[in-house]
Amino acid sequence: MIINLYFDHKYFHWANPIVRSIKVHEPSTKIYFHTYNLSEDQVEELESYSNTAYVDNMKLKFDPKISDAYYKHLNETDPLRFQLTCRKGEYILKAMSKFPEEDLFIVMDVDMLLRCPLNDLRKQMKDCDIGIVKRSETKIAGGFCAASSTKGAKHFLTMFDKLVMKDRLYLCKDQKTLSRVYNETNTKIKFLLLDGRYLDHSSSEKSYIWSAHKSSFGTKQERYEKYLKVVKQMEGKRNAR
Image 1 (cartoon, rainbow, N blue to C red):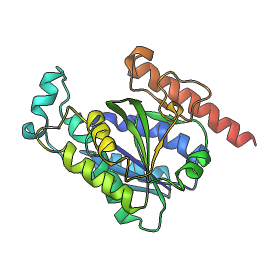
Image 2: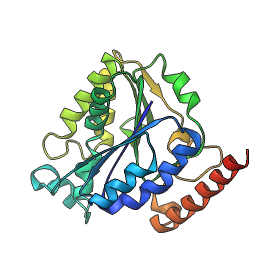
Image 3: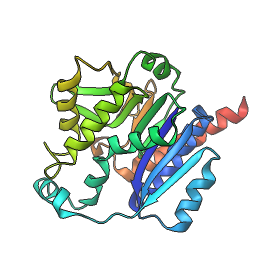
Image 4: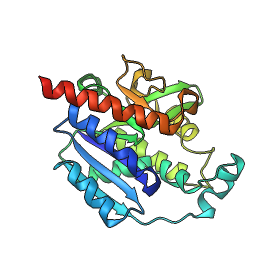
């Protein structure tokens, strides 16, 4: 299995807790970093986290032709972030090409924490092409997606990647576009509709993955400090075994 993480220099500090949590629960799983505008020291730090970590650091500038209309509509101050979040399909397809021997690929936001092994996900995905968290009829969560190395999965990812990067972030960012592609392909592709515990904002002890995305559950700084504390506790329990 490959876990794909993507971020720029502004989110670099989030790599520490998520990688440490992966090493606790999925120590043999490869990590593929798709990063932007990091320094050489930051790249070296990522590479030092694990001998199964791979870093593809790229340069990226804000392109108003891609995301200007969208970020202004939302009154956002960080337009570059939207160019990153909409490349999820590209990241998984690139990982599939780089690691053709692997069977399962995950892409997830970096401001997360893995709370347990992903054995259940492996079992559930054996007969499926794509695993997603569906929030509503028009919204599929963009923070977590699983894909098997199948023709169906590659078709879905390619279709999403082409559509979401078209016409200045078609349908406003990735969530609605994921939903559209799902609705257009769900009779041909085998989907696994994942439990919301794979993308939990409330930090429930029963969840598989925590996400710091929603500010209603605390500021990013508060969530970051909490994640560092929790991952240290997880490491302590692992070392005590």
